[in-house]
Length: 278
Image (cartoon, rainbow, N blue to C red; front, side, top):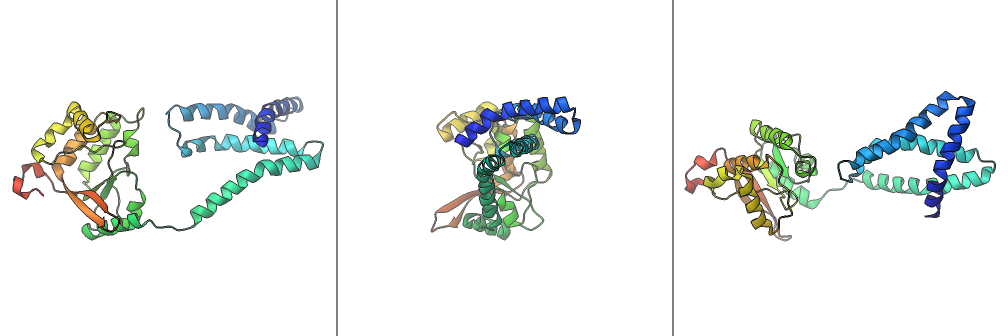
């Protein structure tokens, strides 16, 4: 905490002093990257905050500026009159970053396998061909790798389709066109209030799902809350899935009570006799 406080209280003043020194020396090769980084960093932070989300990968955009500023900061430390004190402060400030980075690297270097994902992938492989696609209505992206099946859509997980302030009809229309052009053999549901998948058991009512008010009423009844987000154009996706897919409850593990709702591609099931619908 003391190191961080010292860092943030001293950094602006040190940057200002170095900018003045570089200006007086007319050393453009050193002054230009520092000026660019000092201006770019706050701009990047503002751009990152515009979406209202705090995803870690958003901050990658600020890494170049942070790298330049940190380089100048440690360079300024090493140029202090008291070399030993400068080296100590440089080590103290750098050590937490190095330790956290090393720990994260060691963790990511270990190959791990999730039993749930493996069981689900084995089921997918048992009922689909290698040339068929699947879609996971959720965010279990490793399933595609584990099952060796591809997604028919650029939205290989559904979280981006339910982001307020981002998702629009343009995205949902594109998503529906991708599904229609290459229907996945399976749609594996991990739906919930964060990413609703509103369908009807009776195929005769599938067409009604294209209406937003109908879908919102069904979602409120299903989740017992109104705190859900259904983007514009998503009801048409629901209607198409309802009309072309049949639900099955698959028991992945009786011991763990893992039951998954999986939708099988059954084209135009609304036109089939009721007896044929499982």
